[in-house]
Image 1 (spheres, rainbow, N blue to C red):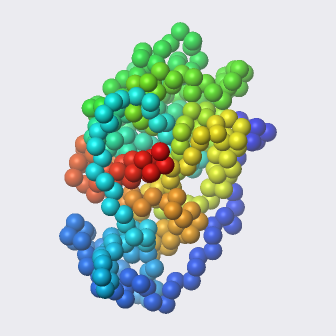
Image 2 (cartoon, helix red, strand yellow; image 1 turned 60 degrees about the vertical axis):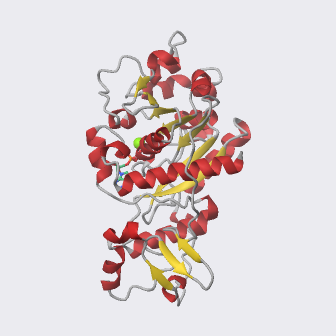
Image 3 (cartoon, helix red, strand yellow; image 1 turned 90 degrees about the vertical axis):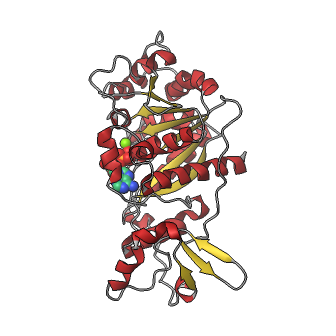
Length: 354
Ligand code: ADP
Ligand code: MG
């Protein structure tokens, strides 16, 4: 798509990065008695940091820490804010009336596909009926769930472009109980061009997903790394958006443009569209850099930032090669735990906003 529609465009300037506040002289965490929760002892994350020369006291803790104050214990999460306890979800009593959520960031490699697979698998573990929608012509979501892009008979492309193809014909099992997949491959890139000539071109995905809303509890759409017509279709079909951001220096580049796109879609096409949250991915709490980026994310986005962060671990690429979510490939890994916690946090946010 060209910029004329206002959908397109790439990264904007680094001036979007908010200024980094000077690190406080005295870290509140260091002043207090710090206890490591048992679950994190094996990571021994703090030790390496202490060996680093002249690192200023981090305002953001390297990991969950318990700070004992006079009359209560406060657990600070990896984002530097007190970590709430998210309730254990109970399975829904009836299925249907799905909430539709898009994973959006026009940057590639930030964890959109990984979040779609693993948040979906975690929600399915909690008893929700989940449909994953691969809306990226690269088909990484489909490949990440073990599908071969060359042998797919029908994909979301057929559903979008052919009136006689129905949702049920295209949906396939994902290999995870309770979770299905609408697959995609490179054919979808043609849809972006062909849709330009359609009537109600922005509403095409919403129209074809309508039968899924009746059957599933949650529909997660994995967007392509662009703000073009496919992504605008995803935003138009969605109740809300999750923005994964890699915890590295240029993470916030382009985020202003993404926000503008979401605002435009809300104004012109979909008034119910909300931002569920910004998710820090590939977080490395052992480095000062990782903690600084997290601090900036919270400065820029405040409570929109999920308390849950996804730590960097090679288990994610291993599970992609295996063609399954980390929640089944390495069920007791920290990566699987991070996504289960994210599932609890999003469920808690939705209930709060309901
Ligand atoms: P996107 O869909 O935004 O392009 P992906 O989810 O495909 O991003 O992630 C890009 C790469 O980073 C993949 O190889 C994936 O396995 C890897 N990855 C994603 N999340 C993590 C993580 N928390 N730790 C380590 N590697 C990760
Ligand atoms: Mg992807």
